[in-house]
Structure formats: structure tokens, C-alpha cells
Image 1 (cartoon, rainbow, N blue to C red):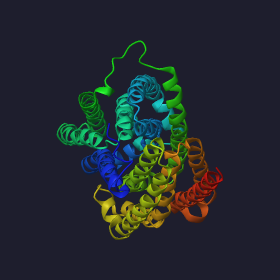
Image 2 (spheres, one colour):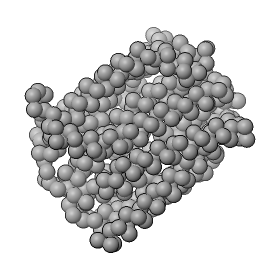
Image 3 (cartoon, one colour):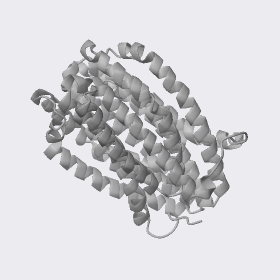
Image 4 (tube, one colour):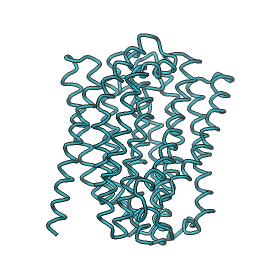
Length: 441
């Protein structure tokens, strides 16, 4: 079994792994971009704001799934580095069934509670119906995402980020065609965009499962008695729950922040949620290089190469710093133009551009924090990483409410930037502590 991250050039291995992962993330985010672009230009700004107002709530489910499976990916990478093929099969069978079942139940609950939650979030009345219809349809795709991300996590742990990219590529084409059919031709509005996304997610999941079972015999299993190994479930939960809790807590916090943002009115909601769509895509290289660091570190720890694991952090941090500086320059030059293409009014574009110029100045801080996070998670330090993320969120929420009167709506950007500074400081202190502990051994 080839273990392609424990020998040769670290930079080359990291780029080969991260580029398909980054392209997958960009294409996944383009689902939302296409929805927003078509709905904004066909149905108008209120419909776009209606979609934007659901972002934090829907992300609660998505982020818990990706957080948990991110932990599974680190465990899979460690098993792969040790050459344990059987462990990969047991990990996949246990969590594709467990997560698929759990998130089917959670999506059903979310669908029932959608109106109450939107009211609790202070969703503006003129976009409430659009938000409710859009979100209820989107919940149908949550179980599909759980299964997809489980398979994707195991494949990434094995060093294969190409397969998830191919599945998302196929899905993206389907999504564009269905968006045009449902929104432009049939004029189903935001609900049509949601239906297009869910159907596309189904195609993406089926494609990846079929790829995995055909390419890797070790990943084939039949659901039934014995498919869920209790010891594997316990170990996988130990790696998956801390980042899932952090991601879930972040998403709950974002719901409070969404409510805070809603208080500035629908124009600010449309402007800043659109800016966040662009921001999320632009930061994918940083986030995915962080995942690349975690995977390289985990495989090398499994293979008994701790020095190479430390080199992965240094190499990745330098690459991420360069990327973040380039992104900052891009936003300063073209931030407003990127927002304007979603069909917003000139006033909303100005609001979004101001947000962008503020937050982009701190991209370097964020990239260094994500590099350190990747290293710590690759070492298996999931609990601390999760706790640090929750602490940073608390700082962001407190700052948002405490300084709203001082900065107005720009406090949304300042509060997030300050939370990144806190996160970097906490991760740096932890890294220093870990290195000192290693030297004492």
C-alpha cells in the first residue's frame, strides 16, 4: 500500500493533495454562488436576502458534519500511515451508517422547527417566507452530505483528494443545469435553487460511493449486523466529536451573529452575507492547506516520522502566508466588483466592499492560525483545537455586541478579525507547550 506523504518532497505532496481538495471546496461553494447569482439576478435582492438569512442555521448541520468527518480524516491518515487497511474499512462502515442515520433524524427535526427558529433569529418579515421554503428543501440534502463527507474523509486520509474533486465537478455541472431549469425557466425562485442543490448533492454522493468501492476493495462493505464496530466507533468519536462540537458551537454562535446582523436591516443582510459567500471561497486555499498540514502530519506520526511532521508545518505555513497576502491584495483591488456581480444595489455593494476591506487586512493572521491548527490536529490534539475555536467564537460574539455602538455594522468585520488574533495567540502558545514537552521526553 503506497503511503505517498511519508517520503519525498513535503511541498510537492502537500500541493498534490491540497489542490484537488481546494478545487472541490471551490466547486462546493459555487453551489451557493450559482444559487445566489441566478436568484439575485432573476428574482431580485429580497429573494437573495431570504437565502442569505438561512445561511447560519443550515451551516449548523453542515459544519457539524464536516467537523466530525475532519476528525475521522486525521484518524484515517494515521491508520494509513501505519499500513492498517482493515481499520479503514471498519471506520468507513461504522460512520457512514451512524452519521447517515443521525443526520436523517436531525434534518427531520430541523425541517419541523424551521419557522420557530427563523422567528427566533428575528428574520425580517418581508423575506421570511422565502427563507422558510428554501431552508426546508435544503434540509433534505443533509443526510446525503453526511454520507458523502464520511467517504470523502476516509479517501482524504488515504491521500486521495482527487476523487472528492471529481464527484463535486460532476455535481457542479448538474447543479448549474438544474438552477437554470428551475429558477430561470420554470421560475420556482429560491425554492427551485434549493431543489437544484439537493438533487446535485445526491449525484455527488452516489458518484463518490461508486468510485470508492470500485477503486478500493478495502472500502467495500455490506450494511448489516456487525457493520458498526463499537471499538472503532468509540475511537472515531474521540477524534470526530471535538471538532464537531467546535463546529456546531461556532454555527450556533453564528446564528446569534446572524440575528445581530439582521438587526441592521435586509440591505446589510444581503451585502454582508454575499460578501461572506465570496470570502468563504477565497479562503478555501488557506483552509485546505491547513487540512493538508493535518493529513501530512497525521500520516507521518503514524509512520513514526515526527521530524518530518514538524517540517510539514513550516512548509505549509510559508505557503499559506504567501497565499493569504495575495488574497488580501485581490480583495483590496476587486472586492466590490466581486460583490456587485450578484445583482445587489449600489448601496449594498458599498456596504459589502467596506466589510471586505476591513476583514481582508487580517487574512495573514488567519492563515498562520490555520497552519498551527492543522499541525495540532494532525498530532491528535483535537480537544484543545476545538476548545480554542469555541473561545475565539465567544470573543467574536462579545465584541460584536459590546462595540456595535462604536463601529456600527463594521463591527461585524472587526469582531471577527479580533477573534482571529486571539485564535493565533492561543494556538501559538499550545504549539510552544507541545514542543517543550517533546524535548523533555
